Length: 234
Ligand code: SF4
Image (tube, rainbow, N blue to C red; front, top):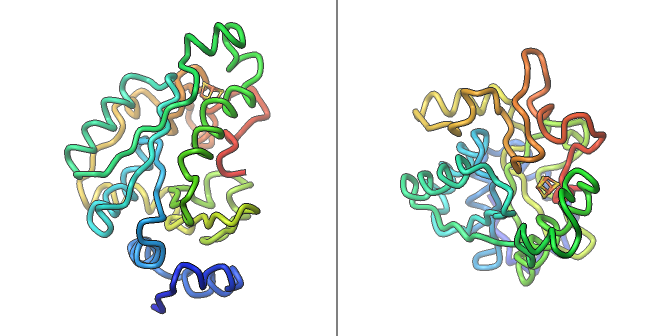
């Protein structure tokens, strides 16, 4: 695969890059991204079960790649515990990123249960803004999203360029849910402790419920609301 100097990426048409990368394995995409963007790249992860294959690949392929964890202050304790276990097991380079206001300060400034009254604003304060700060100065951001998760994600390409020039890379975009679980089985990888209670997709505790038989894997996120994304990938 052709390696590029990071500055050349600007001048490349993204569709051409996607032609190069669309049929590549996630590990090949990761290696390409690391070699291209060197110290100006980070991944992000929410440390749920479906995050584990990408984290395992990062550990095996690009172990120095920083992995940003948005510690919103609203996570289940099980998620924090799982993050720590995976860090130990895989030797990941995890970077915890926190919002400007902790949950108590958020209540003092914006009132109780902002996540119920205005979840978009809550996600903006606790996820979108902190991530914006975290990726400042970076050229590329690796995510674990897959096209089969939502109709919006189905429209994405492996490489996307944001208006501000940040390159987003989704190595697992073309993977299915089945691919994730096959990989977990083959490599005997651990799942998030809440999976056995029906939490297939896990985000902040106030905005996540278990899913029921036949439901979409993200049906437990902001259930009963039209909201399907926190705003990081839209
Ligand atoms: S997922 Fe819920 S609690 Fe977390 S930042 Fe968004 S609205 Fe707030």
